[in-house]
Image 1 (cartoon, helix red, strand yellow):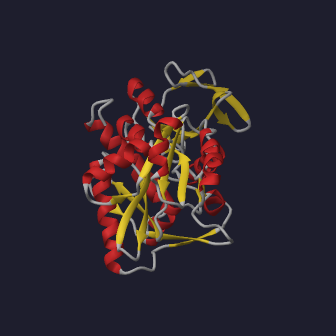
Image 2 (tube, rainbow, N blue to C red; image 1 turned 90 degrees about the horizontal axis):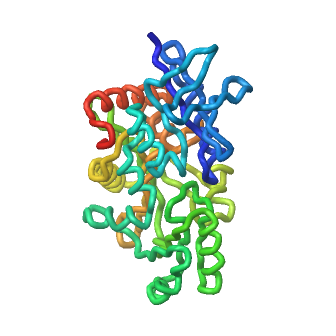
Image 3 (cartoon, rainbow, N blue to C red; image 1 turned 180 degrees about the vertical axis):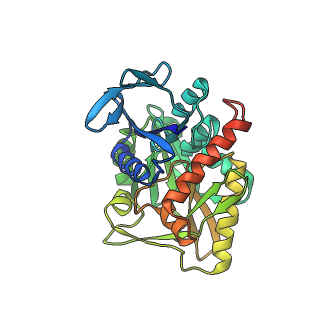
Length: 339
C-alpha cells in the first residue's frame, strides 16, 4: 500500500515563497508511484491541502485532511518550511506529540540551531571551529548591552537572531548606520545578533545520514558575491548575484577540514535529515569561522545542497528518497520527542 506523505511548505516568515519553491521542487522529484504526496501549505491565514487549485483545510487537532469523504492520515511529514515554524522546532514538537515521523532534525536541535545567539556559543564550546565575536540584543534591552556593542570592531553584520535567507541582514561599516540596521532586523525577529565581520572566503557544506547510519558529507561550495554585493545576501541567494562553485576550487586540506568540521557538528548538535553548514575561511590567518547551520536548507533546482549531491552522482530524486527512508528508519528506533 502506498504511504501518505505530507509535503509541508510555506510558513510565517519572509522565507514563505522560497519554501513554496523548494516544496514544488521536492514534489516533482518524489516517486508518486510509491507515495501519495499531499502539498500542505502553512500560511498565517490557515493551513490547507493544495488539491489542484482547491484549498482544503487541515484538521490541526490530528493533522488530517478529508478526501472524497475519507479521512487521510499521514505516515510521514516531509518538512520543507524554511524559518518559522518549520526550522525552529515548532512543527517538530507538534508532530512529536502526534507521533508522526518527519524528515528533519528534532525539536531540541531545531530550536537551538535556529537561534544564532544561542547556537553560536554552543558551537564555540566544542573547540573545533572559531566563532566571530558578537552581541545578542533583545527588543527593549539595547541600552543594557551598549558597552559591549561599543567594543565590537567594524565592519559588523546585523541580522535577526532567528531567521534565514539573509532577510533583514545588513553589513554595517560605520557606527552611524548601526541603529538603522538593528531596527530593520527587529522587523523580522524580537532578538538581533550583531557580530564582527570576518574577512575571507565563504564556504557551505551539506551533511546527511542515511537509514543505514552511513553519513554523507557533500563536496563543499564556495560562494562568491558579484554585481556589487559584498556578501551572500538575499539577492545573491535568489537573484543570481553570486557565483556558487561546486566543488570549491580550494586546497584539498581546506576542503577536508571543512568537511570534517561539518561532520562533527552534525553529530555534536544532534542533527538529522539534510543539513547545511556555512563558514568563512580567513585566508590570512588560515582559520575557519562558523556562520550558521541550516537544518532545512533550500531545495529548489538551483539550491546549494542539491548541487553538492549531484556533484557526487546523487540526483535530487535519490536524495529525497533517502531522506524519507532515513526518517522512517529513525522513527522505528526513536522515542517521540527525544530525537
